[in-house]
Amino acid sequence: MPTPTPTTMPSLLGVFAHPDDESLSSGGVLARHAASGARTAVVTATWTPGTRRGAELAEAVRILGAGEPRMLGYADARVPHSAPGGPRFLDAPLDESVGRLVTHIRQFRPQIVVTHDAYGGVTGHPDHVHTHRVTTLAVQAAGLERLYPDAGDPWQPSALYLATHPHSALGALEELARAGKGMNTVPDERVTATVDVSPWLKQKWAAVLAHRSEVERGAAPGLLAGFAPDVRERILSTEWYTRQDALSPVTAQTELTP
Image (cartoon, rainbow, N blue to C red):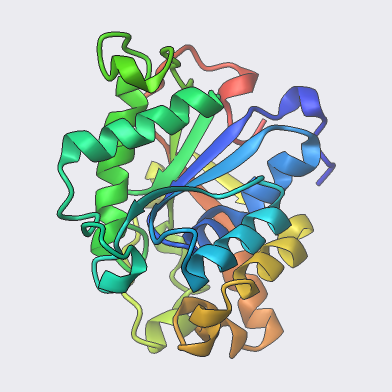
């Protein structure tokens, strides 16, 4: 697969629930766009910069070429100390959460936004599901000048893509299923972009490993680290996305796979 040129790659903003989701869900696409010269960034809904996982996130996005972390500052649903003094993401007022994300969208001005699908990915974590909802609303609101007027000048992303897994990928995910991970997949016809990220797999895997606390506690990065290299490659070398209804006419600059 040839390396895309800067003129073919749109700017990309990933919005994910936790530190490590960016690397696991879209690390290959983020690295691919950054390598082409496109602007890339990541917004993370939970944890804060002063925590260990916040520091790990900073290393991971640096590896992926996505600049500095952008964090909404809410607490993980299952880890109250992830945002000392702050509410859980699930408990925060929806209007407040959407407004915080609108600020980041208007500041970064991406052509494409990528986030979790409606299932919250294969595991269905409630923070993932809520991130999907908040992002869907924020992408629409960011382009409307009368919504969140204090969040900056309006900016309308051209497309929203949802990181997902098709039913046909279940074979590649069987090791995760055996480890007790939920398997929320969608019909293959719902997938609109299948991206071979194997040229960027080394970079993606390094970003996953940057989340050392998750490796140590045996979460998804730790499970993957315990698999044979060929199994890990089978799981991580392809990324699938569903494009939401277009917010502007489809052009090369709004497509995830030109």
